[in-house]
Each structure stands twice: as structure tokens, then as C-alpha cells.
Length: 153
Figure 1: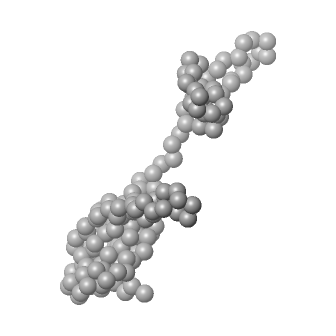
Figure 2 (figure 1 turned 120 degrees about the horizontal axis):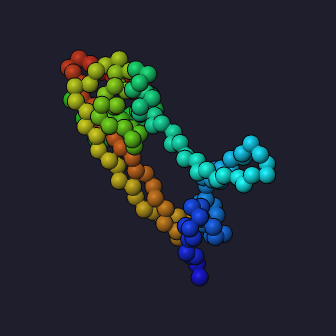
Figure 3 (figure 1 turned 60 degrees about the vertical axis):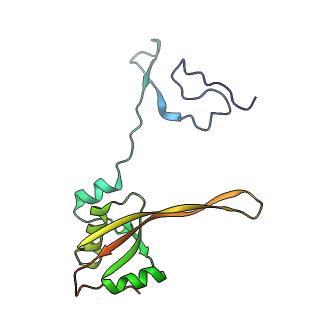
């Protein structure tokens, strides 16, 4: 038998040895009373999720420079750049407004239009015949006004 049924009766996430890695150690916390003789109370502690980077960067006024991963230098990107359109690889959590504000912060230019597309992941066989995923993410086409340019080194 590969998988065992989980016992959720006591509130613990996993009791069996197969699911022990997924169990969270700090889900149950024992709180002591004033007297050591008295029975101890078990109190469930909620896990705090870290705040998203997006909210922090917008609140601080400057957008994180990690949103723009790198400029995408391909044959299509260089041909499109003649029309004042630049292509960037961006973070997977980025949206149009974050990308526009990141361009403004990093290069000091306000874009006219931003288009975002997903890059599909590809499944390739590794050396030993196992399937592995390669690539994926997002890219952004940023259109600038006439006369504005971005130097990509």
C-alpha cells in the first residue's frame, strides 16, 4: 500500500510517516497555565502568510526592479524595436501596471502601452529519459512615445 489514509480527528495535518514531511510543526502550541499541576490547554496557532512583494513595492512608492528580469533579445524583438516597442522578460506575478511603473522607475520613461503574454513551458527528456519542464514565464511588449529610446546593452 503506497498511500495511507490521513487521520484528521485530532486536527494534526498528518500522522503517518508518509505524510510526516508535509506536517507543520507549529500548528499546535501547548500553553502553560499558572499552576504546573493543572491540565495544560492546547491552543491552535494560525500560520501567518508573508505579505506579497507587490503590496510592499506599491506602498513604498518605488516598484521592485526584479519585475523586469532582462531584456529579450531575439530576431523578432529587434525588428519590433524599430517601431519603438521593446520586449522584456518579466516576473510571473507582474501585471501591466507594475511593468509600466517599473519601466518608469528603472529607465525614467513612461510607456504609452504595455502588452503582456505568457511563455509556454516545454517538456523535454533529460539524459536519463525522465521528463523535465524547461522555460516558461512572461514577456512584456512595451511601447514608447516617438523620440523615447531605451539603451539595451
